[in-house]
Length: 145
Image 1: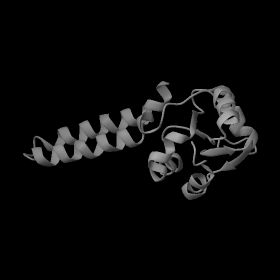
Image 2: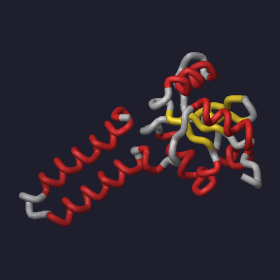
Image 3: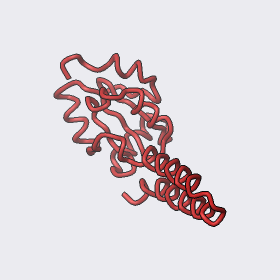
């Protein structure tokens, strides 16, 4: 859990340091803008923008029942963030699995990607697809999901 918050915490601490440096120079507005920018980066790179993660086995079980894709992701991954943002509301229809929280999930991703933990890896009908386009993933969502 802690590993997924390292980058966001670094953004907050760095932003605080840079903003604090602006205050003695008489630029409180600049300091506030810098702090807001760093806080925005912290939120984007945190697990907060992703739907709640479940375990790999639970995701595979649910996918077998409802046919919805499983997305293996990790915090701080720019491609995962792009997928999540571009899917917008549709992202809630997918089963999200954080590979940093579930050893079985990281093993599944390594098995699908020649030993590499390349994410996002989207599993549709048992077939893994590495870093697919958001449009491709959206097309795979069932209308009833």
